[in-house]
Length: 202
Image 1 (cartoon, helix red, strand yellow):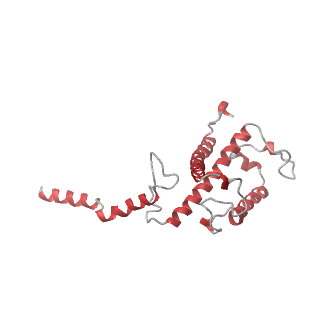
Image 2 (cartoon, rainbow, N blue to C red; image 1 turned 180 degrees about the vertical axis):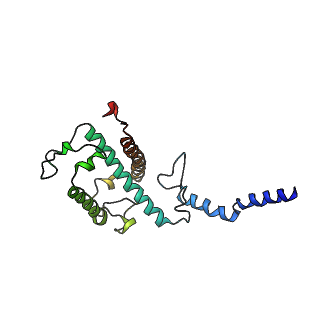
Image 3 (cartoon, rainbow, N blue to C red; image 1 turned 60 degrees about the horizontal axis):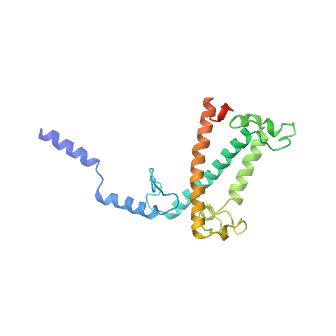
């Protein structure tokens, strides 16, 4: 009986983290809990421990990636809404006479665009990624925050906002981007399942 109790206590102790290990995690949470996007109910949420070491540069890089993916997802959802509503660019997409209106929405569009067309899209996106859409998190001149792509050229009235308005708009963009990422993922998955999420099954 004593042996069994001793083994149980030993096993339980193996899964109990030392008090000295828990402190850095708490420190990291406090370091990032005031960042934009750390809000109720989750607060600062890093289940994979990607910034468990409190590296601000790594956090900024991950935030930049999150913002960029959110912006792409928002454009993707808007593209779905626009084309489902029957709004297309005029004219043709290639020399074969394929009209923009002939290109379906979602994954089905990949089969309608030629290999050369897809290559051009990938090349254009790569050009933007490497030379245009840059901020301080990936080599550009320091901006005000991760995702600041103005690079001293574009502004659109941003500098006319108060600091409170800037913070609010950045938080709105971040949350809308997160929602759009989940939204476009749901649309893509349901399209492959053959189930439309759009009204009337369009």
